[in-house]
Image (cartoon, rainbow, N blue to C red):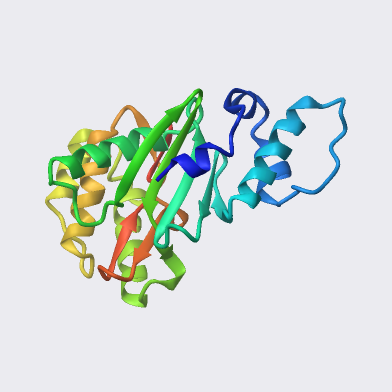
Length: 221
């Protein structure tokens, strides 16, 4: 499943070593047909990748600071993501979720991870595709904001003792499976990565009718 997008990165080392802003400048905004000055070879690598992605039928869906997400018509319902391994904590989360899937105990509000591949310094992911948080039913949006207000805004995530206490408290209107997923994430990544639970890192699965926590951690400071 990942072979098609990996083939669009003939020089992954050059992509990873360049400044992350090049992701935005030369791939995110589709500068595939712009003539790049030869004095900057880094830009040639990005230009080639952008053209290969376009030629292979990939369509840009979105991005983070160190990653990009695409769709491809041969794989409906799948989102393809690549990220810079050294800068992105997402890989640890995705591998943890995949391990839970393999053992059949992934919480309901975790994403479905179809495949993960490492190519040089880059990581590639094939993931179930979801819709934006803003397209979720209103009651689920309220539930997430309620959960965030209690857990993050009220500093109930500062210590393992606080997390344990929060695990025994279910805020009104918050689905139990969503609450449990947040507790599991906070417990596993405590002291390893920072929680990053804003609404941009939560999506909605219309097939299951529930929120999905897609990218809840960042590199710990």
